[in-house]
Amino acid sequence: MIFTVAIDGPAAAGKGTISKAVAAHFGFAHLDTGLLYRAVGAKVLNGQDPLDAAETLTARDLEATNLRTPDVAQAASKVAVVKEVRAALVAFQRSFAARSGGAVLDGRDIGTVICPTAHAKLFVTASAQTRATRRHAELQASGISDSFEQVLADVKARDERDTNRAEAPMIAAADAVTLDTSGLSIDEAVAQAIAIIERSRSSAL
Ligand code: DC
Image (cartoon, rainbow, N blue to C red; front, side, top):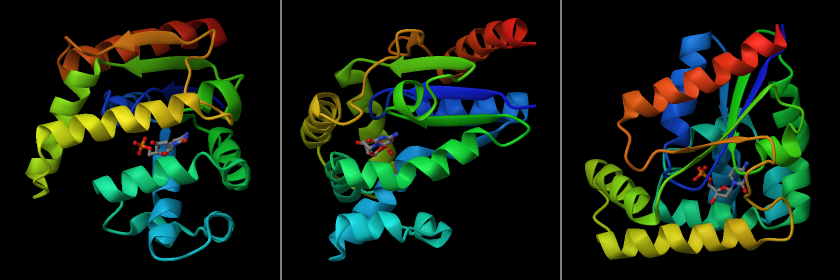
């Protein structure tokens, strides 16, 4: 059974948490595609050429311990603007999406470019203030002491770059269901996402 769930949206909207929970609920595999761009960004920060970094990406690169840092997040957003970098990562994402047993992919362009025929599409969003508050708490918990203002500025800079790039910009697919998590608890957001996917699953079966 091939069943692909595309979950897109801006940084810290809750995509990752929702995607993991949804994948666990349905027994699907999960791919955080942001991690691919983060791994390329981390290699570029180490001096590698962006395209070379993307073309030679290995599973091991995805295990680097610094991938969740603010510097790597910005580097990821910068390399993600490069058309050839994106092209180098397409095949891996599409073959993951088509694996048997079901797959959830989260990112920025899954429902629009990587899997335009996905069986279920969500666009998970939240206000910039809410997202920065969540990201700030996460960073504090992992020992990174950036101020709230810095985190908010970083979130907005990434939104701006990810939305306004020419290649595969972050945008909700026309047939995606938007889920605004601003006023929702994690459990509420996950329950709503599962209900949306359940509806698509009933019509696909
Ligand atoms: O989801 P994330 O915050 O880990 O993503 C890091 C950056 O990678 C994001 O700012 C833009 C880029 N990205 C992308 O362009 N396309 C994707 N499908 C996933 C991430």
